[in-house]
Amino acid sequence: MRICAGGLLVRGSEILLVRRADDRVFYPGVWDVVGGHCEAGETPAETLARELAEELGIEPLVFEPVDILDEPQPGKYGDARYHMFVVTGWSGSRDCVTQSTPSCGGSRSTRR
Image 1 (cartoon, rainbow, N blue to C red):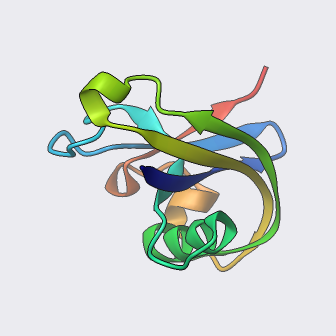
Image 2 (cartoon, rainbow, N blue to C red):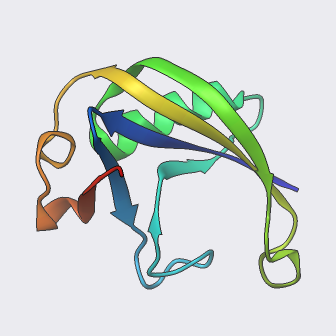
């Protein structure tokens, strides 16, 4: 079973989503939270920190787990468990966290 972790970055009334590449094996071309697969011996919180550093160049400082989701399409993608976090504070900076830029593949959305 794949174990994954993902973070929904929230700042004020905005959230950050990223678009998965069209050539990805799992859920190609969809908008998603930032995250990835747990490596051997890594906790979901450690995975979250590593993925945010690798993908956005930031370190999560304030985050909390909000849910653990089972893979909705196990017949197509296999069994997986997704540990979801809300991230409300981080250090470091990257354009795609502070502004929406096409080069980051990110999109900011206002929560309603």
